[in-house]
Structure formats: structure tokens, C-alpha cells
Image (cartoon, rainbow, N blue to C red; front, side):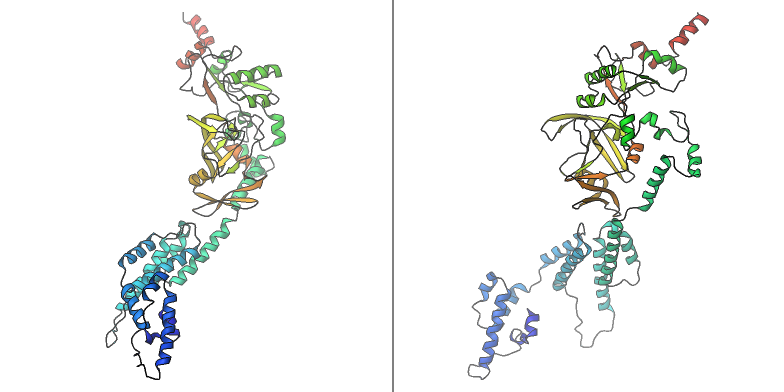
Length: 511
């Protein structure tokens, strides 16, 4: 209000420095015109409720003094509220510009309630006390502004605080804005080093690397197939071919059941580590899949779609540990490694409460959980007994992923993903970016396909991280065609003595 009155040279009408001219004075008419004009300005500058209390004042100075007595007092409650708001203000999801504007508005209001003192001595003081007070307030504003910034500005905050003397608050704002532009630029640039590493791994895995790469890989020895050039983590004979090669997967897709038969006990004692493979007909495979259905180890939908892809059953020595829930009547250890699955894509779903996967091949770890009821989109309910972890890249991995073969889709819960990885997602009309909140780097990319956002991932890396998960089930009553380990074999495994063949030979040598 004082600025508007000062611009029109009318402050003297409200501060009492101009006397009211008498009625018969020649300047009375001019004074009344200015008085009425100032009262109109004051009435239009306040709320209707306040204006109703001063509308009957005849002179501008009376209205001004009335308002001054009521509203010019120090409001200590408002001062406390402003200080708390300044200390608690954080940048959060706001830009640096919006955050600075909000912070500066609070500073200006606080300064209006607590202005800096001015020296009123007759002879102006020469001590630096007043300048120190201004410097302290200036430092407080810089510290408050830097404290509320996100953690991604840690480097620039440290650099600013090391400057001596501290720059002005406007200079500090300029430095922070430059850092914000730099972070936004780097967030949309893919890490070239990771891309080069992945490209080199793909190049070497295809057998097209340089002589140095071949000589390096030749030093590697697989402990499973005893071949050189790779390790057991990348052994196709153990894990099966990855699903990224559609042609190979359609030709080489196999359903492998790993069982421990009593007829192979001699091979265990003699240290044989190679698995024996035996082909079987479609009719035999159908009986085997029916047995898996009866044991609840395979859903009916997979049993019907997998009959044309399985062509062998492998009988290998049993080296895994027993399940704590196994029955004394025997256990059945199966590996369902390479079922033909078309839903190898992952969808980013903001409406999902949990991650869910329909394919056991994607898991690098799997464990049993308490039964969880999951509602399918068609309204049906299924019970989930297993969960695990899935790794797409060194910076993108999912935890506590529910395993439900009946779901037939792989969903990523957006809310759980943001909480687990401390990241945020940016959705566009054709793309979706996953960015780390800490360093603002892109950790994932998705694209819109048929109105749904699919996650891009390196299928070779996922195949290298995935581990075939054995399904251990206690079987008390099994089909007559099921392969069951006899009780004598179980006691043999528990006691750990030599095979029956060696015991018979020893019985003749040591009667």
C-alpha cells in the first residue's frame, strides 16, 4: 500500500504530515478530492469484511490509523510458523526453480516481520556489527536452500560450501540450476560402458571373438559337462538353451525330468557325473505328463502345450539335498527346464500389487512362501506357494516375485518396483523410462505395444542369471507309473555307505 501511495505522492495524507485545511480554505476542494481517492484505494486493497469496518471513516488518515492499530502488531505465531515452514521445506519432486521461488517467498515474508535493524545514532556507527548481522542472515538463507535440495545435488552443495567467501544467494541458485540441467541430460543417456560390456559378452558367446578372447575362454572348464570354453553357470546342457533364440528354442526345447532311480545307484558310488539320456515316444511322454499333473507339479495348460516339445528324459545322480517336508515313502525330484513359453515379455502394471511371473526359467532364486491368494483378471483365484528373485541387469532386479503358472503373464508392479529400487518412472506415448533417484541414471527402458508398456531387457543376461529351480514335493500316494525311490535307497543315502554291489563283494571277502 505504501508503494502505491508513494508512487502518487500521497503518503503525506496518511502519515499525519499534512494538516487538514479549513472548510473555507481555497485548497479544501483539492484536499477532499485526494482524500476520497485515497480512501477508495484503501477500501479496494483490503477484503470486503475488513472494508466494512472502515467504510464510514471520513478521512484517509483515520482509516489508516484504524488499520495500523489492528494489523501492524508483531505476529509471533506467524513468525514461528514461517521459520518452521522454511526449515521443513524440501525440493522433493519440484524443480529447482519452483523450490527456490517457494523458499524466497517465505524469506521475504519473514523479513517483513523481522526486518534488519538500522542504526539510529546521531553519528553513524563505524563498527562492523550491522554488516555481520546481514552476513549471518545471508549465510542462513544459503544453508537453508542447500539443505532442502535432493541428494542428487550433494556434489555441488559440497563445492558451494567450500567457497570462501560464500557467493550470493542468486549465484548459488545459478550454480544449482546448471547442475540440474547436467543431471537431466545424463539421465537420458545410456551408459555406454554397460552397452559395450554386454555387446562384448554377446560377441564372445557367439564364438566370433578375437583370438585373445578365445584363448581366455579356453582356460575355463565346466564342472558339469567337462568341456572347455565356459563355466557351469553358462552350461547349456545343465540349464538348457535360453529363450532369446526363437529358432533354437523351438527346435531344442525339451522337458527334462531329473530323477534318481535305484538302478543307477552303482553309478553314484563309482563317481560317474555324466547323465544318461533315453528317448521315449509321444505316448510315453503323455503318460509322464499325466503323472506330473496327478502330482500337481505341472498345470494342465502346460501339460497340453508341452507334449510336442519334449523328447528326452535324463536320469542323473541325485546330489541335491532333501526337502524338509519329504515323506518316508519317497520323493520325486523334477526339473522342468524348457517348456515352450510365448509370454517371455514383462509388462509394467501400475494396478498390480505384487510382481508375478508365470515362467520358472526367469528366476535365479526360488523359495516356498505361505499360501497367497491371487485374483486373476478373469475373476478366478489361484493359490501361490512359491516366490523368488529375477535379475534383468546389474541395476534392475525384482524381489519377492510370485510364481503362478496359471497366470500366463509376467507383471511388474510399478509401486513395488519404485519402493524396492528407489526409482521413478516417466511414461510417454511410446516409451517409458526407469530412473534411479540417487544418481538420476536410466536403469530400464520400456516401449508401448498394443497399449501396454513392455520392459526391454537383455535376454542373454537374464538366461545367464536364471537358475533351473527344482520342484520338491512330498508324495505319499503316487501313480503306478511314477518313478519312486525305494525306502532301502533312502536309507542308503542317509547312512552314506558304499553301494549294495560293493557290500555284497565285501561280504564274501569279510564273512
